[in-house]
Length: 258
Image (cartoon, rainbow, N blue to C red; front, side, top):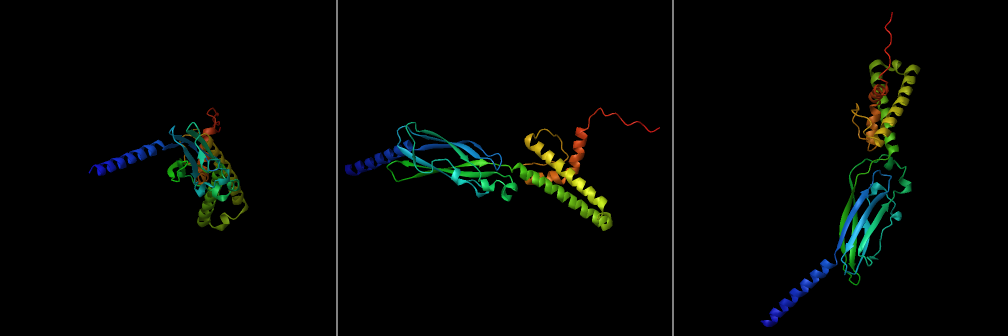
């Protein structure tokens, strides 16, 4: 009976010691300052690692970037092989992942649709002489916008779509003679140039200073090419709005006819 009690007590002490060692060798892992404003920007963040003072741990980081972000894995400067914590037991690791240069002007980049994405990051750590590895995952939330050239391209496509819609409507209503002539085609060319100028102006202002225009006749979020398309499609309403906004208030009224 005494032998069984002693064995039970010994097993309990071993379990307590193992738990204490495991808790003492744990790593606190957090990610801060994550930023990816535009799809073409560098994905940046800071990894914070904190180990217990008496631990003898090694660690490595693994980042799996979604293919839609088109990052360049060869430019990732993080410890991808096991590294010593050092004497301080505290690490701040800057994470900088640039976009692949070949993707900067690709169609997938220009027509990137803004949405919330998660970038998974894993830390794997272990006691130096122990083959057992512990892995902890964490995710970096980012909501990148499409690049400005892509948004402007979307605006131009919106202008073209509007002119095609107007052309089709007029063709069906008045016949080909009213649209297939030099005067009408000249008018369409002028409207296209006006639409490109207006949509580009509005898109650039909304991207750089969103609060500049209040109560626009069109509600559009220019985070990506879709928002640019909406701006371009309604360029005529925006042109009228800008004309009223930019017109000086002290313009003298035209004299009444005699």
